[in-house]
Image 1 (cartoon, rainbow, N blue to C red):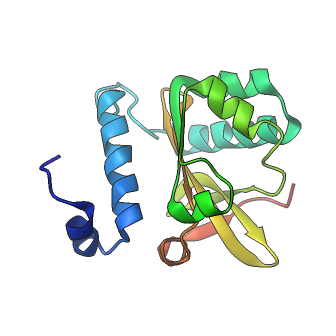
Image 2: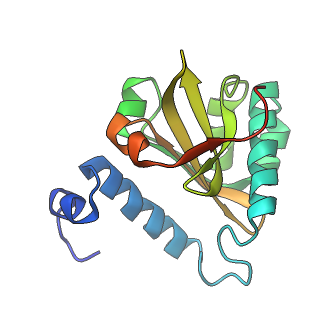
Image 3: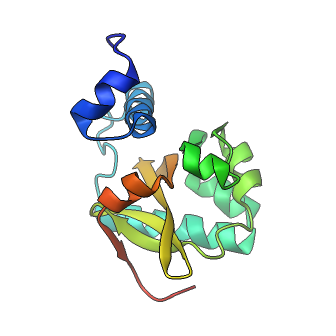
Amino acid sequence: MFGVPYREIAPILGRTQDAAKMLASRARGRISSGGGTSPEGPDADPARKRHIVRAFLAASRDGDFDALLAVLHPDAVLRADRTAMRMGAKAEIRGAEGIARQLSGQAQAARPALVDGSAGAAWAAGGELRAVFDFTVVDGVVTAIDIIADPEHVERLDIEFLGRRP
């Protein structure tokens, strides 16, 4: 916003450079989507957000393209950090259809979780937490998903798995 390089912002925030970029991107997305101007605002009702995230995960697992589209805002964005990209995720996908195509049938091992107290999802393999999915929900639809796989960043997050394994 002020032209300060991410490498200078990251230490101030106590985050990696990638995490600082993700925070800035998320903030820009919320501003451009009117995040704080909606009567509901982003993530206003935690129970509703959990329901929407669970519906998203179920639709993804089942490969239900139409159900995915129903919970995604048409201009939704999916972003991945560098570690997630090395694991095969695309850096960014814009639009509900592109995200639905990419994730349809994919969330087999992702589990609903509280991510720093907010509804999200997490993927653990071999007992080790590998990636966290941070959802932004506005007016009842997913507007952004951030895939966080950088081990240092993931380690700083408070993750609480919800429910039983899928």
